[in-house]
Amino acid sequence: MSTLAVGMMIMIRDRDYADLVGGIDGRSVLVWTCNTCARLCNGIGGQEAAGRLAERLRADGIRVTGVLSTSASCLEGKVAARASAASEGGPELVLVLACDLGARCAGAVLGREVLNPVETLGTGYLRADGRPVLLSAGDRSALAEDPEMASPCLPRSSPYA
Image (cartoon, rainbow, N blue to C red):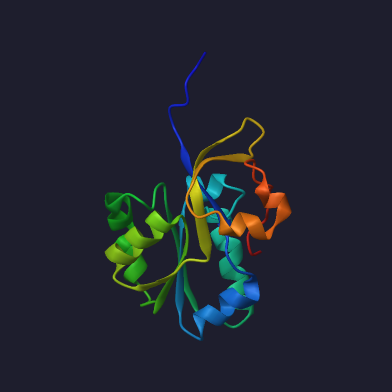
């Protein structure tokens, strides 16, 4: 019998696109994302999802200064390695598609206000079929709102685009 050695953060979107745009409130944004847990967890984040979101925001008239990703937004060194590229164009807001830890780390390193439209549910793992399984939950209030989400195996959902 093998043991589970590596886990990941399990997350969901916490607002719809209209609410996300309302939170931007006319400010310029940098879209920042994690290419590990956020990408693997139903495509909430990752370079492709962040790019699609940036294009949609641009189409809606929001000034997007760039799209940046790192393999792990929760590791300060990884964020710091990309920080100089993040300061180019002077975004007023960093829109982070990552877990709460990654969002806090990105905000601290980048020195900008962060908008994180993601709720981190807890830790888990990725099944062979690509679906995330929640093992250790923090606040499960978001799960209670949607019966389909009540299962420990979260449904697939598309990001904002």
